[in-house]
Length: 80
Image (cartoon, rainbow, N blue to C red; front, side, top):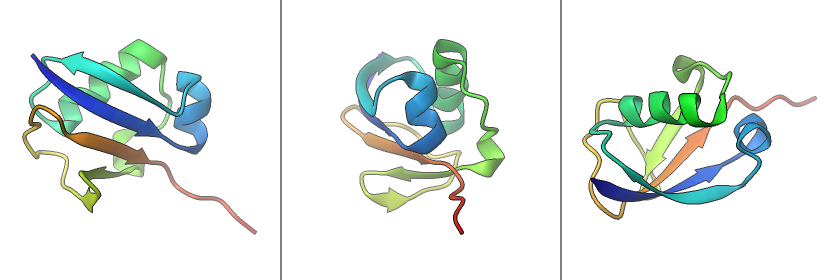
């Protein structure tokens, strides 16, 4: 099990009811982690609509997670 720090914005923050959390996970990839979070928080934003960053760098979904990583899931931005 690894520990990651998660940050949520916009819809994800509203659905998780928090702007971030520390999580122990057995997920090995970002996609696995997001699937776990969908089950945990009921996220409704599909993964393909999100950008993801690890340790302040945009990343691909198949990146292997490491203990201590900081992960940000960035939903689409609406504006006008």
